[in-house]
Length: 85
Image (tube, rainbow, N blue to C red; front, side, top):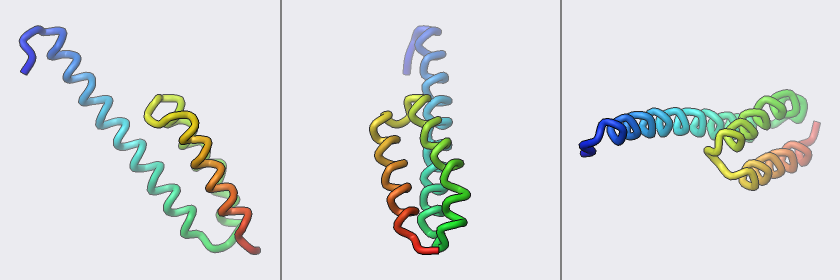
């Protein structure tokens, strides 16, 4: 364990950030999973901007890389466009 007060504070801050990043990451993964489970195109198209926004926020915060965010959004769009009706 750290002995300096600044290092102790840094440990507290990093653990808080870690929890926050894990929460938003898991929430976004669940949203992606849910939108992939939708079978009709209209329902998936409605939710696509919301999920894309969640992915963009993760990239903006630095939780995921911007290229990963781009790849996730691209795969999601391709999957939704492939749906019928």
